[in-house]
Image (cartoon, rainbow, N blue to C red; front, side, top):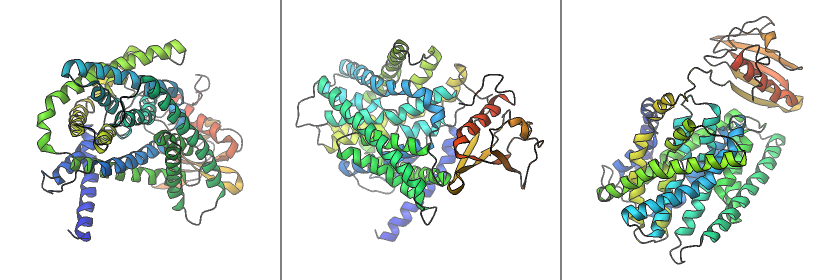
Length: 501
């Protein structure tokens, strides 16, 4: 086929994938299932007849796409929302991963007679929850902020250790590594990855605030390029590129960057395009004719993962967190955390690593993982809202958090905040002077429907109003906290002890 034909086919697939997002949103299914279906349709057994079995190329492209998706997750994560959840998320992303790998390996070795190395490899491939699946499903659920924060942060952190373990187990020319060497190597790579992210991000934020680029569209490109500086830098130092890129973008996304709204929009678009390309490619890589033969072992492995390995890891991590004093998790939250460990592209991409390394029967492992992801995403994704309501964890009655966007005014050492008042906000009916914003802060404009006006101190705010608030740079955090506090508890938020954190 000529270049124009390929361009037409690619554009058609992307448009179909974008249109399918609406269907996925209504059904509660992660859109990855539709993208995988498009890939199968284009593959060797589908209408497209495209034959693609290069696992090495799929692995490299998959890892790059996952880095973009992680970068978008970091840039769009509000640190104030996940800060209290990070300690438990880190426990789940490290100790939880280890427990899940061992529990699944022991079970499939006993039930399916699987070789120990292969059983551990399957456990490692399936241990990581998927950032794209978690973000797409859970950010639509009205969950308590701490619970949502645990799941989001866990999905961002746990890719790094699983990639390391899968790489080590996939080295067919070496004997199976000892537990001590796995722990030492994993710790080293995580420390290096974290260090690179912590070095790159503050330096990048400092430079972006002080370099006047000639076009606003260059800032989002620069941020994404800097994310890959962290990723590739950590990888060259034999550290975890995934951890580096997530930490770097988490810091950048919560820094005072120029044109932050445009940067987030660009990152979201890049992540969507990466998801579409990644899942379609993985669908093309799969061989539908080989899938029926592994359905039974795949279902057994998936049931063990969802009903045993994941719950055991959550219970162990909750007990460990309570023991070391970093927080307690109720039994209801543990049940939800166990069921909400969604899998997606990450396990399928990780399954290409042993395949590309030439490991015997690695294609069978890929097929197992493909079926597990599809079947259990269908089971878990749509049922999460019902489970949240059954466990009384749904926060549907609470106001959604304020949408606050900031643009730095460097020459004035000030920030311009754009605030939208969401449905259910207690800010409805509050007069401007009752906001009691810090000194040197002014609400300069209110946009209501199709008209805008300069408010007075007695102007009453309404749901769906958009406010422009100018404040000094040092006061910005205090202003945001006060606005969130009033949105949650009304003008007497301080009396109720609400501080807007």
